[in-house]
Amino acid sequence: DQQVKQNSPSLSVQEGRISILNCDYTNSMFDYFLWYKKYPAEGPTFLISISSIKDKNEDGRFTVFLNKSAKHLSLHIVPSQPGDSAVYFCAASGSNTGNQFYFGTGTSLTVIP
Amino acid sequence: ETGVTQSPTHLIKTRGQQVTLRCSSQSGHNTVSWYQQALGQGPQFIFQYYREEENGRGNFPPRFSGLQFPNYSSELNVNALELDDSALYLCASSRSNRALQSSHTFGSGTRLTVV
Image 1 (cartoon, helix red, strand yellow):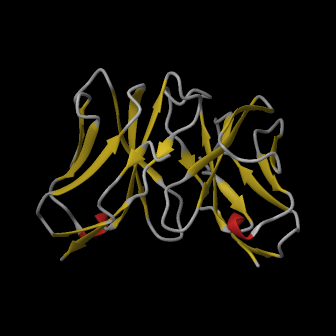
Image 2: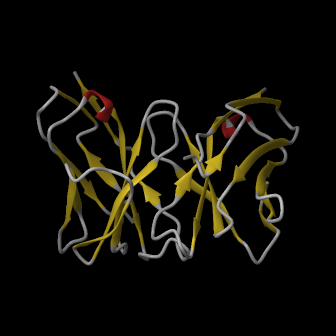
C-alpha cells in the first residue's frame, strides 16, 4: 500500500511565481519528512526536511509546511526558476518504520520562462 | 568529497539470469541503502546495510540479496531475474543507520532491463 502519496503527477508554473507541491501520508507514526529533487539521469538530491515537532522549515527559496492533523505536507518554492524544473519526491520515516524512507510517486515540476 | 557512484549505469539481462550491481558510498558514510524505482513510481526500499550486516529489509523476496564491504561499498545481487525486476536501482549512503537522523545521498542509479 502507498503510505506516501503525491496526487499531482505534474505541475506547470511561470517563472517568478510560487510553486506548491503537495504530499499526503497515511501512517500516523511518520515523524520525519524530506523532499528530494530529481533531474533526468541523476539520482534524487536531498532538498529540505522537517521533523514532526515543527510545522515549518525554511531554507532559502524553499519552505516545507507540515500539518500533522491532516497528515499533509507541502513544499513551497518562491520565486520559481527554470532550473527548478525536475521531479520532486516527498519521503517519510518514523520511529516504528525501521530504517527506510517511504517515497511518494513524485510530481514533475515545469517552470516556464 | 566524492559522492555515491554506481556501476554499471545500464544493463540488459535475460529472464532467469543473475545480476550484481555495485555501489561506492560517499566518503564518511557508513550506511548503504538500496531502492528500486519502477517506471512512474517512487523509490521502494529493498534493504539497508550497516557494519556489513543487513539492517532492515523492505517487501522484497530473498532472491534479492546484498553485501557490504569493510570500506562501506556494497553490492546488490538479484537471482532468477523476472521481467518485473526491470527498474532503476538506486544506491544511497548516509552517515547514520537511523532514518530519523539523516538524509540519503543517492547515486545516479543502474537501469536494469530484463528481457
